[in-house]
Length: 268
Image (tube, helix red, strand yellow):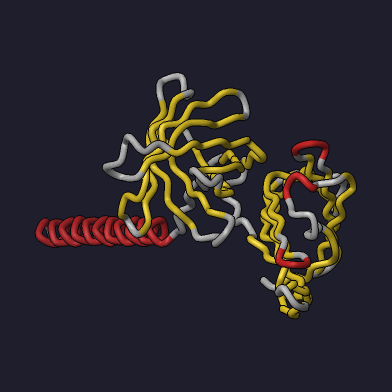
């Protein structure tokens, strides 16, 4: 009889142990399933805030080539790009600023090759200094730039445009006149409230005119350039055309038989 009770007790203990092992196995399985679910959950990364950039327009070099410059100077490190208006090709900028941020040492690169150096000073909205080619520190070229725009939303991609007008001129050859077909053109980029432009015309007897600089937008479709000796040149944009008018004489910038004016059509 005692043996009978002992067997019953042993069976009861074995049953309890098996039940405990089953529940433990289930808990481990549930834990692994939960862990797998956590691993499969998408990881949400915080979006990096866009950098701010300043945009300067003006001239570089002996012949005053028109340029647009884009820079960020966070943590006293200069990064950015610049473009010559005449061809619109991008040039990389890298460098450093002084602790106060008012003096910059900048290198320009094309395809990772240093093609120029700039020593610049910041004064209000003006950025001025010198440019020189590698190994030619004594041959300094002037840099004169004005801040024209500030972006808090990262880089912007400037749109370089060209407008042209083809016409016929007459050239006196000593006995009579020869006809020749010529083209006036204006290259420009609009940035903020400004238009950086260079405008070239050919008039009768091959008299030429050239004017360049920053025109200020007046409304959505019109910009006005104020130049030397009272020159005032207006630009009105309409569709693919730009109409230019000498509101006040700009003879300072042209020959007697060349004139700034007329409607030019966008070519790119």
